[in-house]
Length: 148
Length: 99
Image (cartoon, rainbow over all chains, first blue to last red; front, side, top):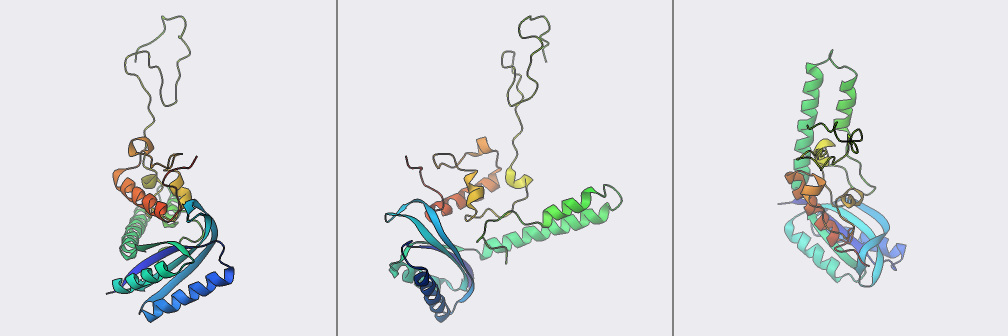
């Protein structure tokens, strides 16, 4: 059984750029060796932390999205815990959220289509903008993945 | 709606809009109706990574703003608290502001 996960972790700010890249590559290969498929890797870059972690005030955020079985996630988390450049990590299972969002979006689109079909002559100028609003995704900050 | 014609001082200057007006007579308020921002803007995804959005629902001290104040509907508040707590865990939002 495979699930879609998201892993956000913070690397120490004093690790060099190459070091971070090397870590990412290493983790990627480890994941594939565990039988997972890495869907997305996103390096957010250095950000201020909201509170101090191990005396660091900032850190490099890296986001992974992968499809894996629960056991391999456990192993992956263990590796992150062992890696001493990693300050913090958070694993979130997102497959059900994605499914829910997908469903909502479909419903929205369907309703919009129905409304557009029902009243073509009525408030014509209002219709396209409304439909547009619905299909538009909410504002996202860089690094936030869109729905798969 | 009692008229205040007869009174000399406060006669013509009754506030017309705003959140609250004329508390002197009976219960006569104009409270703005609060609406859930997520319902109005049709935001389905309350993501823990969207720090800018989450910041709007966190008080200065880092506390989550209650529904009764922000007007967010119950299903969305549930997701919102979830997202805020996740964001706190990964140091995107503070647990408590430091002074």
